[in-house]
Length: 313
Image (tube, rainbow, N blue to C red; front, top):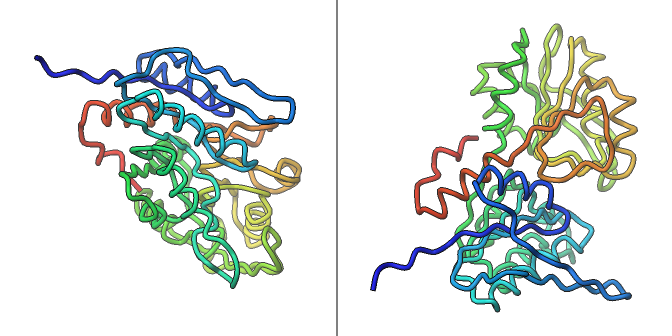
């Protein structure tokens, strides 16, 4: 008997259907058919409408809260396992619940670890994700994790702007490593914002470490949620003499009054990926697609080829 070649099929969770279609097109195939039945109380059941026996399947779905997105991914994985798929790869452009990666005070969960265990228990044999909130979340998994960096998408765009006196900035101390990596690639200076929080998503005080006078500043972060930190940092830098302030954020969560804050801020441009679909349009937001990056990595994974060239910080 000859060697059986495993077929590859791509499916998408409800929220990530548009991105899934882009990835499938770049991969050279069509998105697989899934029907989701919903009961009147909100319970739902995904169903694969084609055979996946013996195949390698990629399930595309960001798991940002609300909880339905994570639950749908888990149900899709479980259904694939029970339908005898040979390999089940959870492709999660945005890995939700990642901010809870440690106990930062007594009597709280480590949600990122719990999510990792749930994905494995459901039947995922591999995880592909992008710009985790903390790199060490990879260690929560016993299965292989391909952690991609959106810098491979953002750096060419930044270079195309040809900004003079470019300075890379981190909106907080935790993002300094990411900012230094970008500054090294762009051969630019670095400044860092120091912030104190009154509580989650509420900043009580912010200070700037470094000089931005006469500089075109690019803030770099893994996500933008309420946009409070970004807009406050942008306004502070303009007050300190910056010529312009842009921001690069991989995951556009943009909850609460984020869109309003962006419009009212001195931020010239917010550059994001389509890891999470935008809920509103804004002239200040520029979306760069991550579909080609994921399609290329998925193709390499399927054909057992090296993907180390894509691990560019």
